Image (cartoon, rainbow, N blue to C red; front, top):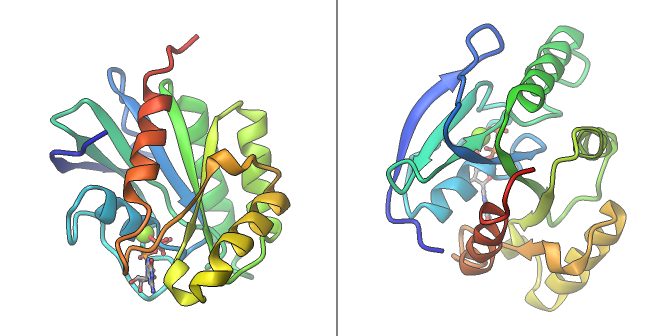
Length: 198
Ligand SMILES: Nc1nc2c(ncn2[C@@H]2O[C@H](COP(=O)(O)OP(=O)(O)OP(=O)(O)O)[C@@H](O)[C@H]2O)c(=O)[nH]1
Ligand SMILES: [Mg+2]
């Protein structure tokens, strides 16, 4: 699959949800600072379509991007884990995610991101429970591969895959810094987009 163009559409909140009734969506989730917005920019060949930051918790809204003049949408979801200890923020995040998963009628795929240097944690496990509960298909992208030795990348990715319980065919190693992994991820997305909804 080739991404020819991408445009920001809208930022949605729980109070002001975006009712997307026509297009299918691919959403990006993962811990705060894992590289979701960077991955969207990388896949779309855009420097700053989605706002990135070294400060965790940058994306707090649900941002929609129209791909290839409205063929489908990329959805950048707010990361989790930045508000450790802040019950109110955690509650808002949970409500926002649940309302998103409940109302997205044509969510074809979620891309769950993991930092190659980290093990999966409780928040990731909660996310996996959501996917199970709402029956959402997902793939894993292991980000920031450039942060470890090349010889260790594959092994580490497989270790994370085992922790998640996902098949090797649904795990992709990426580095936006070294521009690695784009084709593989886009081709997988194409497969999911072409699956008919029930
Ligand atoms: N070395 C390296 N750094 C990366 C890579 N991808 C992202 N980063 C850096 O990681 C930081 C966080 O990236 P973002 O894309 O803003 O992360 P996010 O997941 O959108 O974060 P939130 O919106 O806070 O949830 C930034 O400083 C990026 O430059 C990568 O492949 N390699
Ligand atoms: Mg972000």
